[in-house]
Length: 148
Image (cartoon, rainbow, N blue to C red; front, side):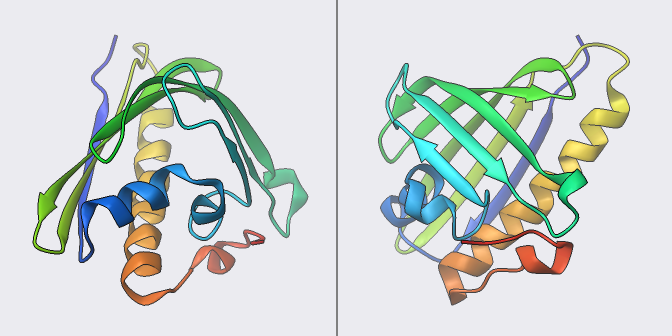
């Protein structure tokens, strides 16, 4: 297996607020997928759907929570270009500042192009998470994504 990718971002909000934005349907749909259906618990199922102005870019993910510790961390399955991978989020911090760490692991050798594509996608959505939480903004429309 090749190495995974890791991303992090600092957000000016308390940890519980950030964790809620990462795990609750109505919050997720304000910064990440166009539609989210989650059962936020270990073993719970989740489905994200993305709708774009150019419908050939539409997509979805059916996933399962592998680990879930409220206000601390969670991980779930992720189908990356036909490869079964794992995405993990961890949140830490205090005094109204939260660090979000994302790791995306389980890539097979030869998947470097898909890893790079996902690294760019994670950068965009993490920046949108920060914008949403700190300012109430949403930049998904700039890339043609439909929002709820």
